[in-house]
Image (cartoon, rainbow, N blue to C red; front, top):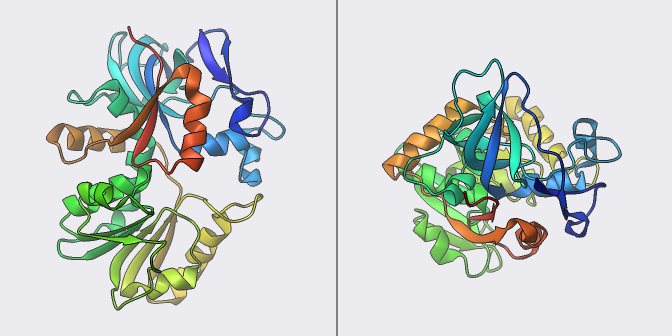
Length: 325
Protein backbone atom coordinates (compact mmCIF):
# COMPACT_ATOMS: atom_id res chain seq x y z
CA UNK A 1 0.00 0.00 0.00
CA UNK A 2 1.04 3.62 -0.37
CA UNK A 3 1.80 5.65 2.75
CA UNK A 4 3.55 8.83 3.90
CA UNK A 5 6.58 7.66 5.88
CA UNK A 6 9.45 9.30 7.77
CA UNK A 7 12.57 7.61 9.15
CA UNK A 8 13.72 10.36 11.52
CA UNK A 9 12.32 13.34 13.40
CA UNK A 10 12.47 16.61 11.54
CA UNK A 11 10.74 18.85 9.03
CA UNK A 12 8.16 18.03 6.38
CA UNK A 13 11.05 17.55 3.94
CA UNK A 14 11.54 14.10 5.51
CA UNK A 15 8.05 12.89 4.58
CA UNK A 16 8.12 10.40 1.70
CA UNK A 17 5.44 8.58 -0.28
CA UNK A 18 6.38 4.88 -0.27
CA UNK A 19 4.98 1.42 -0.83
CA UNK A 20 4.89 -0.49 2.46
CA UNK A 21 3.13 -3.58 3.81
CA UNK A 22 -0.52 -3.32 4.73
CA UNK A 23 -0.96 -3.40 8.55
CA UNK A 24 -2.71 -6.32 10.23
CA UNK A 25 -5.24 -5.45 12.96
CA UNK A 26 -4.76 -6.85 16.45
CA UNK A 27 -7.65 -8.55 18.25
CA UNK A 28 -9.10 -5.27 19.56
CA UNK A 29 -8.44 -3.27 16.41
CA UNK A 30 -10.06 -2.39 13.11
CA UNK A 31 -8.32 -2.12 9.75
CA UNK A 32 -9.65 0.99 8.03
CA UNK A 33 -9.47 1.65 4.31
CA UNK A 34 -8.66 5.33 4.66
CA UNK A 35 -10.52 7.79 2.47
CA UNK A 36 -9.36 11.02 4.12
CA UNK A 37 -7.11 12.10 7.00
CA UNK A 38 -7.05 15.26 9.08
CA UNK A 39 -3.94 17.46 9.30
CA UNK A 40 -3.58 19.12 12.70
CA UNK A 41 -0.90 20.13 15.23
CA UNK A 42 -0.69 16.52 16.43
CA UNK A 43 0.78 15.57 13.04
CA UNK A 44 3.47 18.24 13.38
CA UNK A 45 4.33 17.11 16.92
CA UNK A 46 4.66 13.49 15.79
CA UNK A 47 6.77 14.53 12.80
CA UNK A 48 9.21 16.73 14.75
CA UNK A 49 9.20 14.80 18.03
CA UNK A 50 8.52 18.03 19.89
CA UNK A 51 8.29 18.59 22.75
CA UNK A 52 11.22 16.24 23.26
CA UNK A 53 9.79 14.88 26.49
CA UNK A 54 7.08 13.20 24.38
CA UNK A 55 9.70 11.00 22.70
CA UNK A 56 9.52 8.70 25.71
CA UNK A 57 6.21 7.59 24.17
CA UNK A 58 6.71 8.42 20.48
CA UNK A 59 10.18 6.83 20.19
CA UNK A 60 13.45 8.11 21.61
CA UNK A 61 15.58 8.36 18.46
CA UNK A 62 13.04 7.95 15.68
CA UNK A 63 9.25 7.60 15.44
CA UNK A 64 8.03 4.19 16.61
CA UNK A 65 5.35 4.37 13.96
CA UNK A 66 6.97 5.83 10.83
CA UNK A 67 3.62 6.46 9.09
CA UNK A 68 2.20 9.93 9.72
CA UNK A 69 -1.40 10.86 10.35
CA UNK A 70 -3.49 10.68 13.50
CA UNK A 71 -7.17 10.88 12.60
CA UNK A 72 -9.21 9.92 9.60
CA UNK A 73 -12.34 8.56 8.00
CA UNK A 74 -12.96 5.60 5.76
CA UNK A 75 -14.49 2.14 5.47
CA UNK A 76 -13.84 -0.90 7.64
CA UNK A 77 -11.75 -3.43 5.71
CA UNK A 78 -11.32 -6.05 8.45
CA UNK A 79 -11.81 -6.44 12.21
CA UNK A 80 -9.86 -8.17 14.96
CA UNK A 81 -11.14 -11.29 16.70
CA UNK A 82 -12.53 -9.39 19.71
CA UNK A 83 -14.24 -6.58 17.79
CA UNK A 84 -18.03 -6.80 17.75
CA UNK A 85 -19.06 -3.20 17.09
CA UNK A 86 -18.02 -2.99 13.43
CA UNK A 87 -18.13 -5.16 10.34
CA UNK A 88 -16.38 -4.80 6.98
CA UNK A 89 -18.02 -2.07 4.90
CA UNK A 90 -19.00 0.18 7.81
CA UNK A 91 -18.16 3.86 7.31
CA UNK A 92 -16.24 5.15 10.33
CA UNK A 93 -14.25 8.12 11.63
CA UNK A 94 -11.94 8.61 14.56
CA UNK A 95 -8.38 8.11 15.76
CA UNK A 96 -6.45 6.10 13.13
CA UNK A 97 -2.75 6.23 13.95
CA UNK A 98 -0.86 6.28 10.66
CA UNK A 99 -3.80 7.60 8.63
CA UNK A 100 -1.64 9.11 5.86
CA UNK A 101 -1.89 5.72 4.16
CA UNK A 102 -4.29 3.62 2.14
CA UNK A 103 -4.95 1.46 5.20
CA UNK A 104 -4.53 2.15 8.92
CA UNK A 105 -5.11 0.25 12.15
CA UNK A 106 -7.33 1.78 14.80
CA UNK A 107 -8.53 0.76 18.24
CA UNK A 108 -12.21 -0.10 17.97
CA UNK A 109 -12.86 2.04 21.06
CA UNK A 110 -11.49 5.10 19.22
CA UNK A 111 -13.82 4.85 16.24
CA UNK A 112 -17.48 5.67 15.66
CA UNK A 113 -19.89 5.49 12.74
CA UNK A 114 -19.30 8.36 10.32
CA UNK A 115 -21.93 11.12 10.48
CA UNK A 116 -24.35 10.33 7.68
CA UNK A 117 -24.50 13.90 6.38
CA UNK A 118 -20.73 14.44 6.15
CA UNK A 119 -18.33 13.61 3.36
CA UNK A 120 -15.25 11.58 4.21
CA UNK A 121 -13.20 14.79 3.98
CA UNK A 122 -15.45 16.58 6.45
CA UNK A 123 -15.55 13.58 8.79
CA UNK A 124 -11.73 13.37 8.76
CA UNK A 125 -11.58 17.01 9.87
CA UNK A 126 -13.66 16.32 12.97
CA UNK A 127 -12.09 13.74 15.36
CA UNK A 128 -9.00 15.19 17.08
CA UNK A 129 -9.89 18.88 16.87
CA UNK A 130 -13.58 18.31 17.57
CA UNK A 131 -12.91 16.07 20.59
CA UNK A 132 -10.35 18.54 21.94
CA UNK A 133 -12.82 21.43 21.75
CA UNK A 134 -15.58 19.29 23.25
CA UNK A 135 -13.39 18.24 26.18
CA UNK A 136 -12.12 21.81 26.66
CA UNK A 137 -15.70 23.02 27.11
CA UNK A 138 -16.79 20.28 29.50
CA UNK A 139 -17.09 20.18 33.27
CA UNK A 140 -16.60 23.54 34.97
CA UNK A 141 -15.57 25.11 31.68
CA UNK A 142 -18.88 24.40 29.97
CA UNK A 143 -20.47 27.83 29.58
CA UNK A 144 -24.04 28.61 30.52
CA UNK A 145 -26.35 30.68 28.37
CA UNK A 146 -25.42 34.35 28.53
CA UNK A 147 -21.88 33.83 29.81
CA UNK A 148 -18.94 35.33 27.96
CA UNK A 149 -16.33 33.06 26.37
CA UNK A 150 -12.99 34.06 24.85
CA UNK A 151 -11.45 31.64 22.34
CA UNK A 152 -7.80 32.37 21.53
CA UNK A 153 -6.73 30.85 18.22
CA UNK A 154 -10.33 30.93 17.03
CA UNK A 155 -9.60 30.43 13.33
CA UNK A 156 -7.62 27.20 13.80
CA UNK A 157 -8.84 23.62 13.92
CA UNK A 158 -9.64 23.39 17.64
CA UNK A 159 -10.59 27.05 17.90
CA UNK A 160 -13.29 26.98 15.25
CA UNK A 161 -14.99 24.03 16.96
CA UNK A 162 -14.69 25.74 20.35
CA UNK A 163 -16.45 28.80 18.89
CA UNK A 164 -19.20 26.63 17.42
CA UNK A 165 -19.74 24.68 20.64
CA UNK A 166 -19.68 27.72 22.96
CA UNK A 167 -22.18 29.47 20.70
CA UNK A 168 -24.36 26.35 20.69
CA UNK A 169 -24.36 26.42 24.51
CA UNK A 170 -25.71 29.99 24.36
CA UNK A 171 -22.56 31.88 25.30
CA UNK A 172 -21.51 35.23 23.89
CA UNK A 173 -18.28 34.31 22.12
CA UNK A 174 -15.30 36.51 21.32
CA UNK A 175 -12.72 34.98 19.00
CA UNK A 176 -9.07 35.99 18.76
CA UNK A 177 -7.43 35.49 15.36
CA UNK A 178 -4.93 36.99 12.93
CA UNK A 179 -5.45 39.43 10.05
CA UNK A 180 -8.08 38.41 7.55
CA UNK A 181 -9.71 35.82 9.79
CA UNK A 182 -12.52 37.89 11.25
CA UNK A 183 -15.22 36.95 8.75
CA UNK A 184 -14.41 33.26 9.09
CA UNK A 185 -14.51 33.39 12.91
CA UNK A 186 -17.85 35.22 12.82
CA UNK A 187 -19.18 32.56 10.44
CA UNK A 188 -18.42 29.96 13.13
CA UNK A 189 -20.65 31.79 15.61
CA UNK A 190 -18.48 34.44 17.28
CA UNK A 191 -20.28 37.65 18.22
CA UNK A 192 -17.01 39.61 18.48
CA UNK A 193 -13.53 39.25 16.98
CA UNK A 194 -10.16 40.56 18.16
CA UNK A 195 -7.28 40.82 15.67
CA UNK A 196 -4.25 40.08 17.83
CA UNK A 197 -2.04 42.24 15.58
CA UNK A 198 -4.21 45.28 16.33
CA UNK A 199 -4.46 45.04 20.08
CA UNK A 200 -3.88 42.86 23.12
CA UNK A 201 -6.65 40.80 24.67
CA UNK A 202 -6.07 42.62 27.96
CA UNK A 203 -6.91 45.99 26.38
CA UNK A 204 -10.30 47.28 27.39
CA UNK A 205 -12.68 46.43 30.21
CA UNK A 206 -13.99 43.07 28.97
CA UNK A 207 -13.80 40.05 31.25
CA UNK A 208 -14.76 36.48 30.40
CA UNK A 209 -16.30 33.61 32.31
CA UNK A 210 -14.35 31.06 30.24
CA UNK A 211 -11.11 31.46 28.29
CA UNK A 212 -9.96 28.70 25.94
CA UNK A 213 -6.33 29.27 24.89
CA UNK A 214 -5.26 27.30 21.83
CA UNK A 215 -2.29 29.50 20.95
CA UNK A 216 0.17 28.85 23.76
CA UNK A 217 2.03 32.16 23.63
CA UNK A 218 0.52 34.36 26.33
CA UNK A 219 1.82 34.25 29.92
CA UNK A 220 -0.47 32.99 32.64
CA UNK A 221 -0.84 36.38 34.42
CA UNK A 222 -2.09 37.99 31.18
CA UNK A 223 -4.70 35.27 30.72
CA UNK A 224 -5.89 35.60 34.31
CA UNK A 225 -6.35 39.36 33.89
CA UNK A 226 -9.18 38.82 31.39
CA UNK A 227 -11.08 36.34 33.59
CA UNK A 228 -14.01 37.22 35.82
CA UNK A 229 -13.26 36.72 39.54
CA UNK A 230 -14.48 33.09 39.39
CA UNK A 231 -13.65 32.49 35.75
CA UNK A 232 -12.21 29.35 34.16
CA UNK A 233 -9.12 29.10 31.96
CA UNK A 234 -8.45 26.03 29.80
CA UNK A 235 -4.99 25.79 28.25
CA UNK A 236 -5.17 23.41 25.30
CA UNK A 237 -2.21 21.27 24.30
CA UNK A 238 1.46 22.09 24.54
CA UNK A 239 2.12 24.76 21.94
CA UNK A 240 4.93 27.25 22.47
CA UNK A 241 7.55 26.96 25.19
CA UNK A 242 10.93 25.21 25.03
CA UNK A 243 11.99 22.41 22.69
CA UNK A 244 12.11 19.93 25.59
CA UNK A 245 8.88 20.72 27.45
CA UNK A 246 6.97 22.75 24.83
CA UNK A 247 4.04 24.55 26.41
CA UNK A 248 3.57 21.83 29.03
CA UNK A 249 5.34 23.87 31.70
CA UNK A 250 2.81 26.70 31.38
CA UNK A 251 -0.06 24.23 31.73
CA UNK A 252 1.57 22.62 34.75
CA UNK A 253 2.01 26.01 36.41
CA UNK A 254 -1.68 26.71 35.84
CA UNK A 255 -2.75 23.44 37.47
CA UNK A 256 -0.45 23.98 40.47
CA UNK A 257 -1.65 27.56 40.97
CA UNK A 258 -5.36 26.83 40.62
CA UNK A 259 -6.07 25.66 44.23
CA UNK A 260 -4.68 28.93 45.61
CA UNK A 261 -6.60 31.48 43.53
CA UNK A 262 -10.21 32.30 42.79
CA UNK A 263 -9.88 31.23 39.17
CA UNK A 264 -10.17 27.65 37.98
CA UNK A 265 -7.06 27.05 35.87
CA UNK A 266 -6.79 23.87 33.84
CA UNK A 267 -4.59 22.23 31.22
CA UNK A 268 -6.13 19.89 28.66
CA UNK A 269 -4.45 17.02 26.87
CA UNK A 270 -7.20 15.52 24.76
CA UNK A 271 -7.92 11.77 24.90
CA UNK A 272 -9.70 9.94 22.08
CA UNK A 273 -12.99 8.48 23.38
CA UNK A 274 -15.80 6.86 21.48
CA UNK A 275 -18.43 8.59 23.59
CA UNK A 276 -17.09 11.96 22.45
CA UNK A 277 -17.03 10.82 18.83
CA UNK A 278 -20.66 9.74 19.18
CA UNK A 279 -21.53 13.16 20.63
CA UNK A 280 -19.82 14.87 17.69
CA UNK A 281 -21.64 12.54 15.28
CA UNK A 282 -24.98 13.55 16.79
CA UNK A 283 -24.12 17.25 16.73
CA UNK A 284 -22.92 17.05 13.13
CA UNK A 285 -26.06 15.24 11.99
CA UNK A 286 -28.18 17.90 13.71
CA UNK A 287 -26.20 20.65 11.99
CA UNK A 288 -24.99 22.06 15.31
CA UNK A 289 -21.35 21.40 14.40
CA UNK A 290 -20.01 21.76 10.86
CA UNK A 291 -16.40 20.83 9.99
CA UNK A 292 -14.83 23.77 8.12
CA UNK A 293 -12.34 22.39 5.59
CA UNK A 294 -9.84 25.02 4.40
CA UNK A 295 -7.94 22.97 1.81
CA UNK A 296 -7.76 19.39 0.57
CA UNK A 297 -4.51 17.78 -0.60
CA UNK A 298 -3.90 14.44 -2.32
CA UNK A 299 -1.81 11.90 -0.38
CA UNK A 300 1.28 12.60 -2.50
CA UNK A 301 1.18 16.26 -1.33
CA UNK A 302 0.85 15.52 2.39
CA UNK A 303 4.17 17.23 3.11
CA UNK A 304 2.85 20.43 1.55
CA UNK A 305 -0.26 20.16 3.72
CA UNK A 306 1.90 20.00 6.85
CA UNK A 307 3.93 23.00 5.68
CA UNK A 308 0.75 24.98 5.12
CA UNK A 309 -0.44 23.99 8.60
CA UNK A 310 2.57 25.69 10.20
CA UNK A 311 3.16 28.56 7.79
CA UNK A 312 -0.10 29.32 5.98
CA UNK A 313 -2.44 30.04 8.93
CA UNK A 314 -5.29 27.87 7.60
CA UNK A 315 -8.84 28.74 8.58
CA UNK A 316 -10.42 25.61 9.91
CA UNK A 317 -8.97 22.24 8.99
CA UNK A 318 -6.65 20.83 6.35
CA UNK A 319 -7.39 17.37 4.95
CA UNK A 320 -5.43 14.79 2.96
CA UNK A 321 -7.46 12.58 0.66
CA UNK A 322 -6.31 9.00 0.29
CA UNK A 323 -8.70 6.57 -1.42
CA UNK A 324 -11.52 7.07 -3.90
CA UNK A 325 -13.16 3.64 -3.88
